[in-house]
Structures are given as C-alpha cells and as structure tokens.
Amino acid sequence: MSMFRFFPGIIIVEAAMVALAYTSMNAADGRFWVSIAILATIIGLLVAFWFGAIADNIKKDALAKAKEDFVRERETLLIAAEADKRSVLEESHKRIVKETNQVHAKANFKLGAAFVGILSVGAVMLSIQLMTIGLLTLSIAGGGLAGYVIRARQDALAYRSKAALTAIASLPPIQAEVVKTTKDAQKKLPQKT
Image (cartoon, rainbow, N blue to C red; front, top):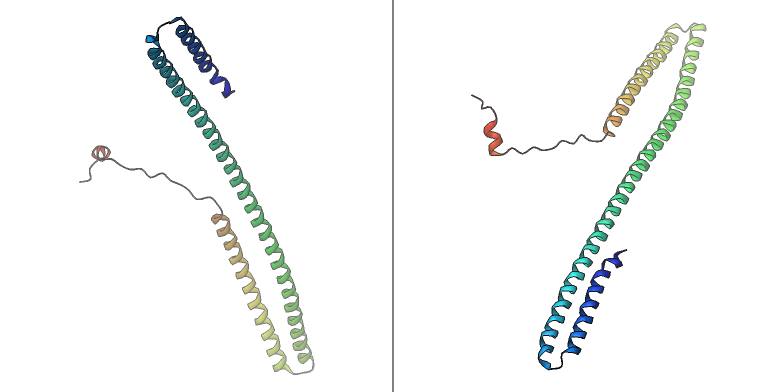
C-alpha cells in the first residue's frame, strides 16, 4: 500500500526526464546543456525531498502503530498478571484456612480428650471418698476448659479482623489528582481575615 505513495513521483520524474531528453536532442548547439543539467538536478532534488517526506510519514505511521500494539499488549499482560496473582492469593488463602482448620480440629480433639480424662479422674476420686483432691481436680479441669474457650473465642475474633484488614488492603488505592494553584487563582480565592 505504501509503495503506491511513491508512484506519482516516479511518473513525474520520468515525464520530466523524457521532456529534458527531447529538449536536449532538439537543441543542436551546446548552450542549453548547462540549463538542462541544472533543471534535471533541481527536479531530482525536489523528488528526493518529496520521497524523503513520504518515507518519514510511513516510518512515523509504522512507529505509532507499533507503539499502540505494544501498549495494548502490555495492558493485556498486566491484566492477566493481576488476575493470576489474585487467583493464586485466593487459592493459597483457601489452602491456609483449610490446613488451619484441620490443625485446630486435631488440637480440639486432643484437648477434649485430656479434659474428659481429667474430669473422669476427678469423678473417680469423688466416688472413692477423696473429696478434697476430687474437687480440686474438677476445679482445675473447669478452669482450664474455661480458659481454652476464652482463648479460642479471642483467636476467632482476631482472625476475622485480620481477614477484614486483608480484604481492605487488597483493594486498589484511591488516586487523587494534585491541583496546582496559580497566582491568578490564588487572587480569586477568598482571603481569610
């Protein structure tokens, strides 16, 4: 397509050279050779500048198109990378929550078994008439169970607040434009007295 931009210039140069050749053949004496050579040089220079301008425009158009394609590709890559990053973060978060829940379930089972064991020891001691030691064992088990329940509740609250902070931190930042005031704009502002 860009090749056809040069076509009119080539036709003009060929027509001018044919006209100059015809004129030089009709001129019998040598006095027109200098003027014909100068005219051919001027025509050649004008066409060279014309072709140079056309080539520069073609180069600028190609460069602008390449830049636009690169910007579009870069934007596509950034969007894809952001989507991949978000999906990886979501998957890792789900995996961590699942593993944490499994660990908590195992710990809860072991702790429950330990409390049942302590309570059963206390009940056995009460049944065999060791009242003081039995009551002491039951109160220790009850205090430990109450402390564990309170700690589990605090951990759940801390986890929820941490999840909320993570969700807030994952939001894109708010961008504001900086407005510069000029001397004229400052004059128009109301003056504080």
